[in-house]
Image 1 (cartoon, helix red, strand yellow):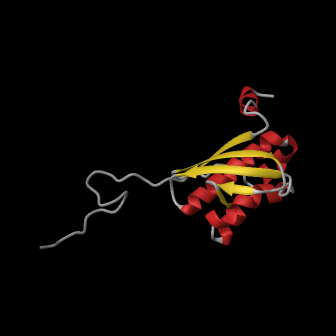
Image 2: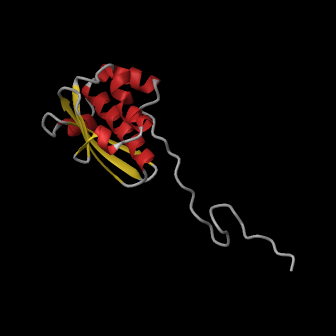
Image 3: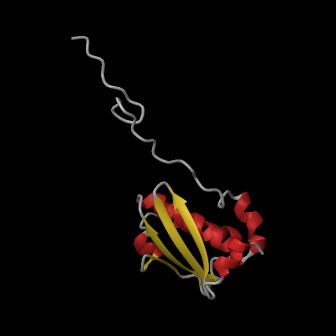
Length: 139
């Protein structure tokens, strides 16, 4: 067991995982339970109203077949709603990897342990945006 795994197990019976996407950061705690998911003190269905975002958050649990075995508590901040959903997905996948090492192969095969590194490109000096220049004026 690595030092990082040992550190994350010290939080009692909760297993921790951190997920990031764009500027959204999700701190995830999983504990054995009945499959209840709470995001920022609200039920999953209330926080993520879009079905696609709810499926993204549940994806690691469904892929490993542990949807009704773990209770999940998530604190998410920053970014937009889709970025937050993807950050939650990565956080849950990382926590599941620690909780059930046998699930690592399934999670990695589904691409759930890979962080999406795409970020907004910064604006450059002399341009109107990251790449767009000023409009040419003949007169």
